[in-house]
Length: 347
Image (cartoon, rainbow, N blue to C red; front, side, top):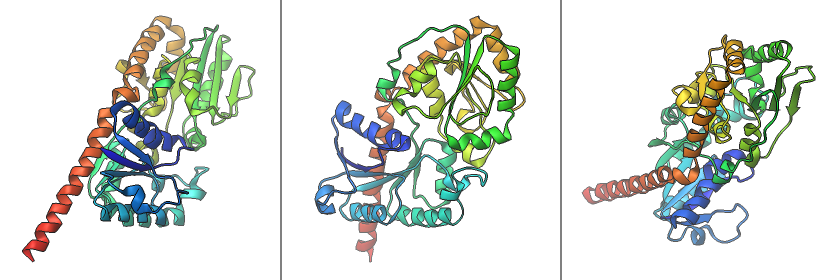
């Protein structure tokens, strides 16, 4: 296929949903892949010449709408992709002021306008795809997030004691407010002299000599960071926004061979010991964590399963999913074109 795409490579979302899979499709599968730079001065017609399908990640502003319209006119399929339900962002979230309220209403109107020129709308979860269908997407499909292969090249670094870690962006501050995880981790630090707690991104506000807060790490080193945890956690509150999220965090943990504990919500529901972890109800975090601290054999068993599952989630092993969805968009475009021609002939 001849594929053109637009995504923001400066964001982790744009990497997982644009740059990484498109680069792999070109380098590993031999597709003709073109990145549509926003500052390219060449006429859009020239950049779209001969293209079979255009992938647009997240963008739905006027330039993206124009891109979709022009791609449609050129006979190319349009696949629009997004991986977060910004309309479900809770008011208590630090990012609500940027994406909620009137900003969301404007974005929703832009999305609906773009859907008129799209053939397929994709996301990493069934829940989010269902939301897009409600908002007028012509057809929807799921593509999970997969791990860049270099992220699986882990340097194991032995250490003493047990490290409990959580990698979480700023939007998880809401989860800290709604779940007792900070209190639980503080209690475990007091009870267990051999336990350390590390949080990356979100701060837990714990005042303890064995607690460390790391503001951020590059996406390429997330799995390496997780590999230095003995237990990785992914607590999320039961909200519409969280139910639409991706399961990539557990894959990042597993890539480092780290056993994980996660809330049984949205993207994590249905995962478990086969994938190297366990699901934990809101009131079960203390018991779940201390059980693994006290049972090293269980911890080692889960670590082996996590490593196997993480390896299976490499992007190179799952490119078929991207190929199938892009091909589906092309077929939908052809079917739509044939239906239009049939109506014109009948008229």
